[in-house]
Length: 241
Image 1 (cartoon, rainbow, N blue to C red):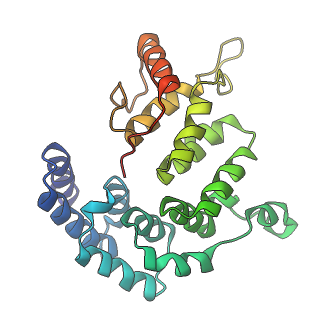
Image 2: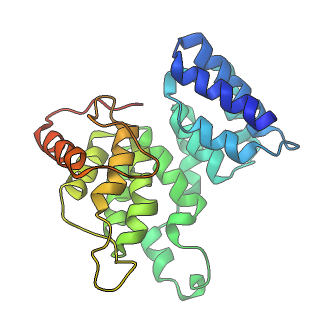
């Protein structure tokens, strides 16, 4: 029942995007996100990541600062901090950074999570979203080191999209206009085009993207071709931040 109630509130905020309504919904989500007894904290985090910087009122930002100061740091709070664009938390986020290249080559980390699952990577993404140029560049460089197309399409392109900066959109455009495909699920058949995955991602990032997101990725060839043409013609990005 609680899940349904909050889902309705988020849905309402999206249908009627009045400033006060969206801020109130964010405040309510922040409370359950930080509630140690909540069983909806993970879902609350996911919902919060879909909001914009202006949806975080001063009260919400103060609550985030309090959690950051208490060092109750997980990937979720770090990413939400980036969405809220709380610039005074940049030093705290910097302390969490790792050297992803060194980490990936460390034999002692062989059985550890990949670098793109670490708290340090989330902190770098948050700093990139908040406009730190060196972190924007490092994020895109690191994603380029990954050769597995499936990992890029299902994980890392979402990370790039989270950054919500022109450089990130250019990176996604390059991959969207490529002919890359995932490995086929059945021998003798073509794998799903990477562009299908990026249709959904780009619809989340760009307010004027010509086709609405489809969770099932059941886009028609005409829709994909329309968007490829549209993406190739863009000279400025209208990014949802």
